[in-house]
Image (cartoon, rainbow, N blue to C red; front, top):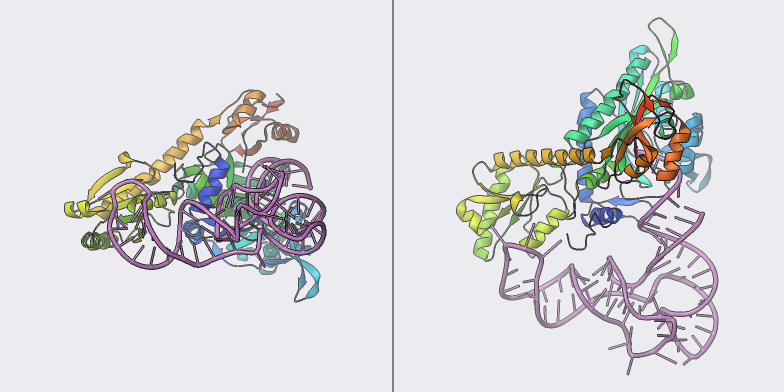
Length: 476
RNA sequence: CGGGGCGUGGCUCAGUCUGGUUUAGAGCGCUGCCUUCGGGAGGCAGAGGUCGCCGGUUCGAAUCCGGCCGCCCCGACCA
């Protein structure tokens, strides 16, 4: 175990807090519930952002920016929306030293302002679809903050689209959910369960909400992204209408979808171990760290000379050379393991003499993760190894998800199953049954699976006829 | 909002019960010099604290009393 780091088995929540802070991803800000995202954590977020932004643009979306302040009255235009969000709003009532005529809310999400603007911009079916995304901060006055997982202010992207038909909007909602799932799998090495939210967990104001749920290292679920079918609810509330080719006037069909800095928490909790973070190579700020080893000044010059050549050879990767003078190699090994750098290159006098380096895999501690690689073809070996690590992380997470997912037949089995993982079981659709599970086991319905068996079954709670299988789990 | 914990150098804490031998300490970190460096190095010399805030008791308060503020953790709300 790393020095001063609580083990995951001992106290997972504490381990999480310590890793986030010791690895310098984030730190507590002076205001309760707020955090400072430190450079290393922000670099990780930038990579998340880059990978998603490419996917959004490849599917025809454009970025824009809408304001932080929203007139309080906007929230009230959609009944469910205001009911859902008013408990967690931060409201500005004074500006420039004067009481404002109308209070401004600090956006908790932007459907309302964006709806207002879309009403102005959209006239005709020729203007559709509108496919806009924004990268922004939002504020929700949460009762129980936790670093990255639930902070008062957080960073995210929120996509907002408007369409001429219901089918088109529904296709958009599914397309974005698929993009999130593909991103999580291929970039973050996180396998997810896709599904629809139950009515009680649905976004305030949506017709349907879809989610990707990931399993953390303690078996709990984390909603990692969402995609909402808003139907015509917001279009009606904000008068977003368009004229059809036939001359009629119709309300648009809108969607919204988002992924936040919470996802950083998922990366930490899915892959990390008792030494600290393990970052997936595709998103890691440093994919490779070079630790030079020397005794004398002669050796130092020699080794650093070789390290420069390695740096040049690995120009296609994100590489960090740790040439800090006063620290020993052993300290640096542990330090970069805490920070989750996927691959370490060790170069000492012995390696220089043998024209090789030692590669050490973060995901495979100890001797079996180390291998000597000759200078020539170093880039090829590193590229291959990073790919291997990326695949190994995904496979490990996939196996963990599979091992900790059960299919209880009885209510008692369900309650014990959710203590350490996901439970897939029949659900009759009744909110009472859902509430009972929550009250007695603290687990909630994370989603209703897309892939449903053809036959029906008996509700795991009440035994009534059930048409759908639900994923139950305790959630963050 | 309920439950628990905590406010003492940058960090983790001891000292508080039983007020005065403490000129407020330790470990880690930090600064300088020297020796080290293949899995968390060592020596020497330094810098750094109005003990969360306000008031009270007392000859004397980090320590006792009253009030206030803040933070963390666990639950209810949620990306």
